[in-house]
Amino acid sequence: MEKLLFKTHSNRFSPKRKKRFREDLKIELEKLGYHVVIDKKLFSSNIYFGNPKAKYALTAHYDTATNMAVVYPFMKYFGARYGQLLILIPVIITFFFFPEYYLPIFGLFALVLFIGLLIPNKYNYNDNSSGVYTVLKHAKNNQGNNDFFYALTDNEEKGLFGARALRTYLKEVKCLKKIRIINIDCVGTGDMFAITSTSNNNFLNNAYIKCSSYRDILKIDSKLLSSDHALFGKRGIMITKVNRSKFLGDVYIPNLHTNKDNVIDYRNIDETLLYIKKITEEA
Image 1 (tube, rainbow, N blue to C red):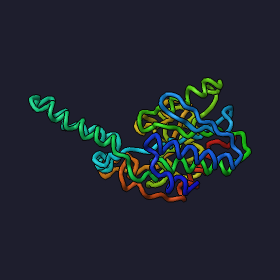
Image 2 (image 1 turned 180 degrees about the vertical axis):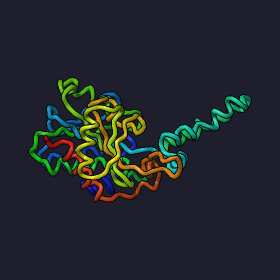
Image 3 (image 1 turned 45 degrees about the vertical axis):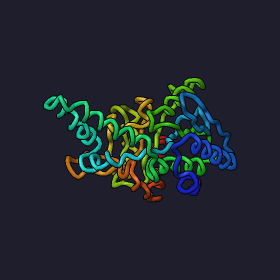
Image 4 (image 1 turned 135 degrees about the vertical axis):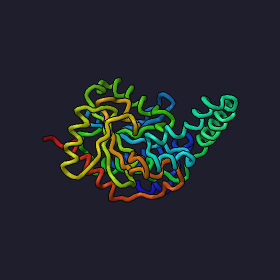
């Protein structure tokens, strides 16, 4: 499956490329004895296998990103929180102090972002082949174990559409209020692991206590690092790996949406699996 992700189907951006990946992955998962469901709804095609009535779902988005290298330096130097604000500063300054130039500046800004949204990123090792590989390795190591449900979601990069479809599916099988989501996103490289949720909640706190007993890990209770888990509120957490920005000490995900996303440290995958084990093992 390593070759499938990082070589054969490293670019999973267009509908055709994603379909080929799903077809090949379905064959590999069926070899492991899994019944695979391709769930098509809300503009997305999610891949489900395992037990939907399990206590935990391991998720990762399999779609790959556009190239937004023009934005990345803001994240690297100022972090995700402040970097996003700084990107908007030229537009804000123009609006208040040079209104006669606002429309051209805003138009140029929108054009650059729009063009970026049309260009597939060449390499996607960290975002999010690393997360998909972690989920698949966990599934391979737990064949015949009904304690987990696995969901590889589509169109996270376009607005969490796959996660919305997953939420609908879990509601249909009457498991939404019981299952806990552990989302794996961008664990291939970085200086420190982080566990995050959209708010300070019991699931996040208990997971943090279990993980920090093993090794130091950051806890982030905000919507800053948003991914599929965000749509599940207090029932969703994410494991990721981050760096500290050069200024202001904020965090960011390294090599995100750039052609430098061609590095993965497989030791991080194994460590993520240990964190998953800590979170899901009973006290």
